[in-house]
Length: 170
Image (tube, rainbow, N blue to C red; front, side, top):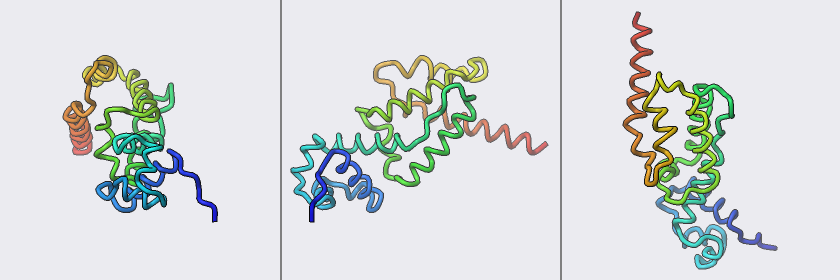
């Protein structure tokens, strides 16, 4: 019986399958080698190290998230993207903690961020000045960390829910 040739794509797919099935803590080069039927050292012909493996896995998860369409109104685009991200992360719950921690984002990750920022630039600056500032200015600064915006985003969500709650109480 012929064995399927090992490739970067096959290694990444197997790593994702393993992480989906057993959790990211169970992912090691040795365990992944067993999964694809090779010695762990053979994997290094396709990924330099575990960080590159994780970067590739995260990039694949980002590729599963629908990108906001150019010209679409930003609330609809962000809603669609959030729902798509939720579905991708339900399939790959291990990715949640890794998605913004990668120091070397791949092309799908960069396409995703670029698309989101493109849509957020449509936000009326007067209505959401801090969100606009983040989308337009801060994201291009060296050393910028998306995680720093967590509290800001959380406040926006809570404020929006509070506003909706006040409207329904009337």
